[in-house]
Image: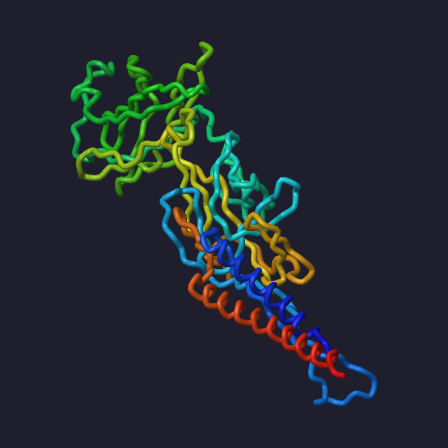
Length: 405
């Protein structure tokens, strides 16, 4: 008599219950993928044996496979929570330096501006250039917000204007700016510039018509007496004659000197309509601290700062595999690549190729079907009981043989 079949059945059923229990325990784990035990029958072969006469020697768990189906997406409202809708994995750098892959998008921001997981693994992606542009084909590395969530002041170097002056305006009379008729302030605008320390320097700009199709430009720095910055002339179509030759505006710097800011009015026009300003921008900025973060569907991480600037810090890069079931789970909602999975078959921004898109302010739920797992648990329990019964029966049969006289 052999107890092999019953023992193998007990062992396989026990492993199946372990898998089911693991699924149930992680029903609320973000990004968790359910597993299932897959069974294979066992046969003993011997020299000269023929098919069809072996009763088999039991069962084994040939593998425990993971089911990488999409989990439900739950809205959290946390801007650093990110769910993948479709294929792909987040790439993270573990504290030991290894690269792991995860579907858990519950990220945090540490004191150094690094985007991390609950286990201090760093989210990987492309770091943006200083101007916020995302480099094409750049090296993937840990994503970090500028200077730990702060951006430095930038002194102004250029003012760009777009405006229309009235072609029907009267030609001004008078020589000194303070004696012009109509007064100098009739047509003008203002803009705030910045020095190297981020201090604000208000600049007022005025335009006065001195002849047909000719306008003089004046500037006043921080309320000082206006000074001339040159002349704009317009052609018969009302377009400014380019290149314009406006002189720089001189601003005070923080240590008692001065610095120059160029003035660009190439977009100016002279049409028969009222004076209006369509554009008045400068390229300086005050220092700022991080106030909020947003992540769009393409994975671009945008930081908004207290000085009103919004700057891209980088872009999340996803990875996918030809054989996702070959990935090795290591706990903490991470998987490692193995020879079975191979290296990632594709890496890139979310939404490209066969990579899924991102949903900010949301998390992917576990794909465990709790009802199904409870039914599976009852089935596995019955299988365990039935295998135990075969051992009991074998024991009774052996006892009968031993008791023969």
